[in-house]
Length: 308
Length: 255
Image (cartoon, rainbow over all chains, first blue to last red; front, side, top):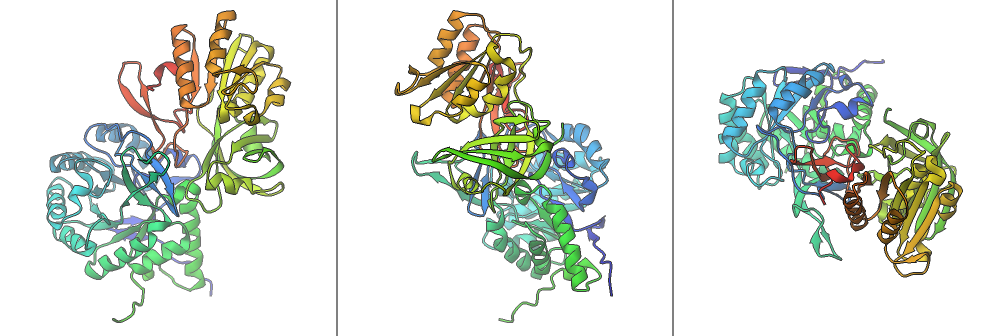
């Protein structure tokens, strides 16, 4: 029997044509990759983080390759939420894909103001970035304790009429605790993981390679950590999870969904292969056909973990 | 112009010296639209990041890439042989705005920065003075190619083993003292670029410099390859070498 598996998934009441999303910060506002393929091929595009005012970002060098991955410390460079709404969002929405806006800031008030402005737009979902490791204030500071994570989620919830995804930091002792706290505070969905804090040093100059000294590690190197964290969070919460962290191939996507993700995001893999999300989608479809699985949602959390 | 990702075979591979590789690729989609000063992103095995490599030359369907082996990525690339294919993304970036080739112009290149100048200088022929600086004579490259382009070539080495004993920017000052120059185009190490830009500024000459920065996506999306630029209103911002550059007006570069 040849089946046509159904790829669509639902994240907080929003239907995505397929579970392949691009990760925030790796895909700009979509224009660059739209030169290569229609963005409507994707389940959703997560835009680069926006803050209330324009941000210059960190001094370079901002990126460095690592074994099976890379470090970045972009520092939330962005043109500000108003520019995004005015100059980028209309175009992005016209591409026929679901748009997730990523919200960042230095203070709770700033997050709330950005979320409020985005609530009056065509954005489909908001992703609260409380896990950026590369800025002095805000960012990960909000995402590394249950109290702060719940506090900012509850505050933004009051200012946000869109479905709210909270993006979690892996740089914590127990991510499931943080996940439970933000769910209780009103999150509609979770995305995880953001990058792991890392560092590289030039042994000749004895200087860090990144001007910011440290940066976020991403790529295949972090994938097992991401799979483990998605699995731990899935055991704790029932809300939709967008799994991300080193997803490079369709096999990785299947693994992430089996661990408990309802959708997956592709980030760093885009840099070696801009077509990675499309290839992952095609491979996922083939996998479902081969295994005669009619609905991709059947994979979610379907790992048969060992008793212990 | 449109960016493409394409697999293209290596039709010729030469190693002018141990750590230098000179590849010619059959790559019509990129070669036919490549402008001088642009670059390509080359996929290297399973490495996370592509390697940005400047386009040394583009003639017909052939794309020429010359690169120095610097690390694990380029070491892998150096092992790919004739007949094998590479995965190339490009052409990318804002190249040199060369203008009227009937004007006298000067190209300044240093070290591995000389490679994109070959493509850029050719249309000027004898109107171009090409000044190239190397650490030592053994590091010189593409000399025959520059001669074949019909340009006036002057050389400098840090140790005096070939050409002028000293800096290429000393050759630049001497050349500018001799005769008129309508524009300067430079690619090379940062101190050389800065000295070239300052020389041009002192003489009020238009100057374009090709910058380098650690790069990730090479598409303008990740904002990794930042370089500080001064806007017309005096404010300073981080531009991105991959798509705002790699070539910038020297007056706007914040060194």
